[in-house]
Length: 207
Image (tube, rainbow, N blue to C red; front, side, top):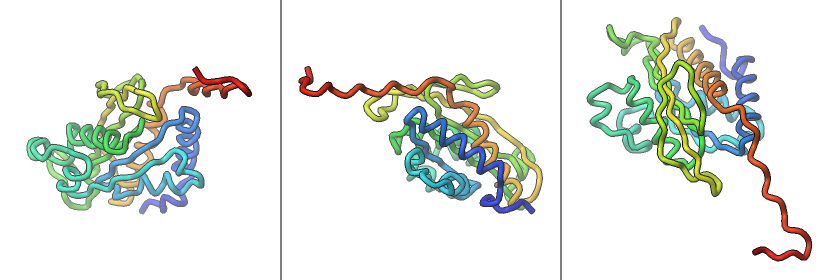
């Protein structure tokens, strides 16, 4: 059995690093979770001050929730199943658009012990991330429509991949949390933060 996430040193370190990266860019994160049931959002908000970089978390466990809260097309779920690349990508896209933020991550999988199949055995998890101007390695990437964020128009890119985790339900869910954060941290661009807007000089008038 996996240890509680609140005692997971790797998750805590990943959240710390993620917070620093997002704060440096002035970006907010939204999560869209199915099989983890809010564990990723809980891990993020375990860190004090997370309200400065974590905007909200969607727990869309049912197919109806995915459609109602994230705008995932029911026909997409019917055609590919809830645990699939198209649905994970639609979840990430819907999350970033509904929250009007720069960054999102989405997970949908089979945590077990039941629910698996020959082509989607227990431990199968699809991930998707929407990240501004990032270049993915080993993951499918597509550009999304620009998203207005704090007066800017960023161009998020979608990244997606599948993982197959071993272990019981708790282990699969914990591995999903770790991988989602680890991969997001790798995808966030290592670029300098946006320069601050200089204040008007005393007595000067705005143009």
